[in-house]
Image (tube, rainbow, N blue to C red; front, side):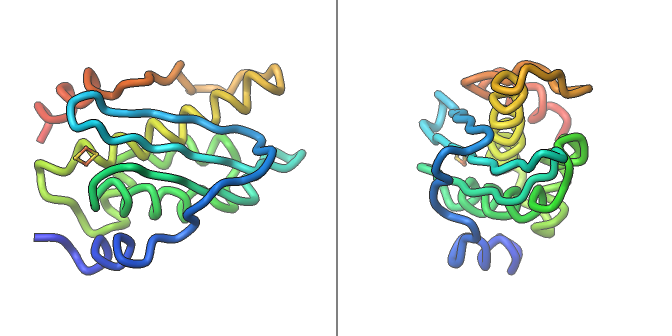
Length: 147
Ligand code: FES
């Protein structure tokens, strides 16, 4: 049911933890399943993500997608990190079962939420970044219709 990559990132999640004094931190949840994800980013003066860590209170797929999301954004600029969508995370994990697609949305939104916090703290606008939601329940319905 799950790809080897999903199982690997679930069993050995990368970048679990917190960043002290992060450049940006964001928390998102899904009221329906009760899962919560917090993403920390360390961003240097050139806008490059030097480090990313996460804490996820959620299902196995949520752990695997947050692990993969942190791996994908590391070394990227904030603009490039915006392209790490839930689809990109799923592809990197060799897919997710349809009922678990929404878990990857948490990862995307957690990145956006941390980037939003970074932008607010630095008084900058990140082109293409929309204000993140705290509860991805609404977005989830739109995405589930797509699959
Ligand atoms: Fe809710 Fe996976 S079941 S994030």
